[in-house]
Length: 98
Image 1: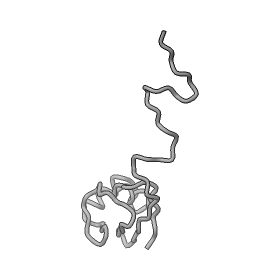
Image 2 (image 1 turned 60 degrees about the horizontal axis):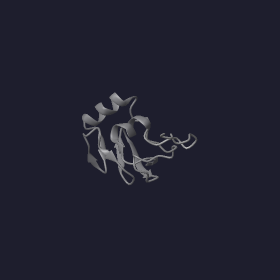
Image 3 (image 1 turned 90 degrees about the vertical axis):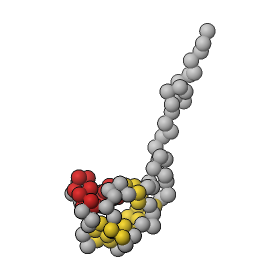
Image 4 (image 1 turned 180 degrees about the vertical axis):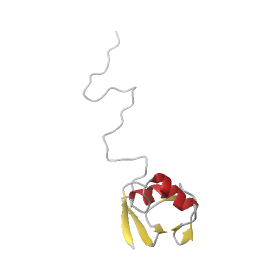
């Protein structure tokens, strides 16, 4: 069984298959899942967008993957903060209203 580090959770099943090389591209990954050729946690899974989290196991094409994660929710990242348009960027002075 191969461990796969999830940088964010959850991740859609077909994306794991694609990025881990179990499918050539996203369309092929979706077909593999819809044909019932993938097991998640030992059970056949046909939902392409099944949410995969750390602790889940995936079996496909004779390979087994165990998901281990960093625990970041999908809406968080290590990127710079996303400033809203309403507030000025840190290096710009706030507009003055006269």
